[in-house]
Amino acid sequence: VPALLTAGIVDALHCLVTDSPESEGPGWTEKALAVLISLAATQAGRKEIMSTPGLVSTLATLLDTGEPTEQEQAVSCLLVMCSADDKCIAPVLQEGVVPSLVSISAAGTGRGREKAQKLLKLFREQRQRDAPPPQQPQQQQQQLLQSQLAEGGNGGGGAIVCHRESKPLCK
Image 1 (cartoon, rainbow, N blue to C red):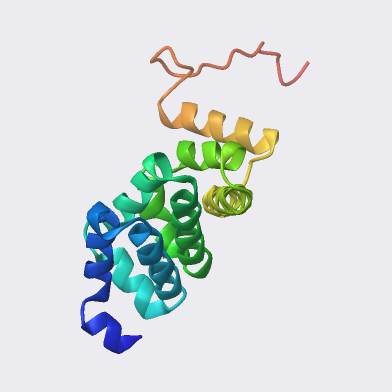
Image 2: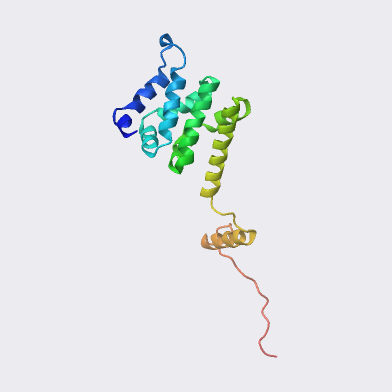
């Protein structure tokens, strides 16, 4: 794999995926995607794929515009990368893949549906891991009160005034 990467295979595959020559027959995109999936399974391959300008965007575009088998392979490539390395998730999500994945999970090929569902689940789990833990209602009330006190009042811009009936201390 290192020899392939240093030879520039990822750039060549990117060119094949974006400019698949119809005159040379169908299937070049699928073949290029199959090799990208294999490369995505290695750390060095993932790094090269993620650092190739426009490649993740091209994969995202294939989710929308590709043939069903191309969509399936694009999902597979993204799933392999994101499953192996959480650092791949944010750049993939930035490409706006979720609507396409939802569509494929409903109407794609059998394998495409399965892989799209797995990738969406992975994104959901990542979002839940990154989200702050839910607060208890009592903690929320305490934080609200503290923030109001810090702002200097009760929302009206003035100070909080406590009124207490005065009672004599001695009879």
